[in-house]
Image (cartoon, rainbow, N blue to C red; front, side, top):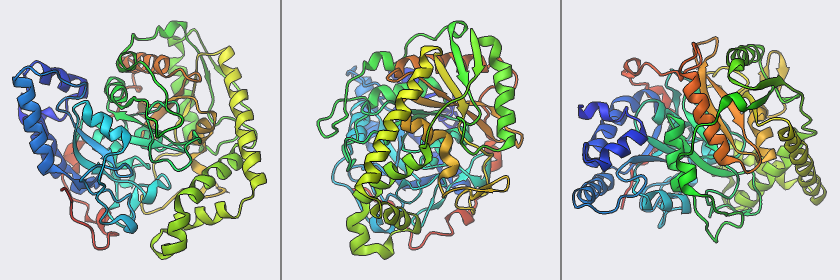
Length: 497
């Protein structure tokens, strides 16, 4: 095995090889850095780099293996951390000029957990400004292109993480999800993104600590890789009021579900989400192809009430809580999306807030009734095939104007409102040859059972024509795309101290 091929191996296999002393964390890191330097100019997935410290930590990880020290779950694995999450000593910009030179003094809670498990923070991965929207582009680092076609969007807000994984730059990456920020980029880049139940991965920096719509979670090329990272991210933290425990060994790897016993409810649009006719057709073909796997697979109807308005209000409250001081003191340095979201939220009333929380409760209760008759819910993750990254968002769909710049994300934010765990699972390609991501939603609190089912689905898909995970042509990414970084002004240098 050559150093050049190491970065393409799965995270679980790499961790096994490190533990058996068949590879060194030093050579693995070198392979990942070489892959980043070779391919990132074509896709622009990477923000700040921490190579110097990563090399020192890889050497220390190698020494620990050689002396027979206890090894953590992620020992010696390079990791990419989404640039919304604080990393001690490593530049964390959140894609905003306001944080162009921000170097945090400490790790966020979940970064501290993965580092304690032995992961080596190698880079930060690109995001939309402050994570707003599902097109990963910002005025600090530029835009991230899709690895299957860099002229198209990579999704967001965990777009840099998804692309880094799809390009074999890193074995594992972190993400976060409010309206679909883990699931959407995973779906359109052909990797796995898992949105866990709120409180399982601690969020110590969330201003509205009792609001469950935002979560942190793992991304990987396979379900097993994402599970291994998820198990390391788990932890009870007294800075997060929703924080709660989950068995990390069960999270890391349970038994595969018996798909033949599962009852599947599926939909193309949850009754009211905007979805293109091509994606509807792909979803129907996928369900027809996988129908023999299950005990039952029924297309059913859902009642999500006024989910769009509900998400508008709850999402806006988070913008008001987070950006009031910045808006009041330095509005000109906030992007137009951030300002618009803040202004919408600040104009809302207490009556709006009370209604939204009551409506979310009604949505939650109705959705849980589905699981009296079914074990899983399946839907598309995105409503269209990826569009050019130069188009900030999807403004209309098949002649119908959408309500706002994030309305096209309804397939995922409807599930966010229900708070059930969900995973975006690679499931072949769409009619344009771009990855199609199946959104699989588990029972309330049923994270481990969902992951067990996702692993079984992944294995089954590998044996069904047209359903296996698509892989980008990395040789086609040898040509730099300077236009992706062209919107950068005074781009910062990588910082580590």
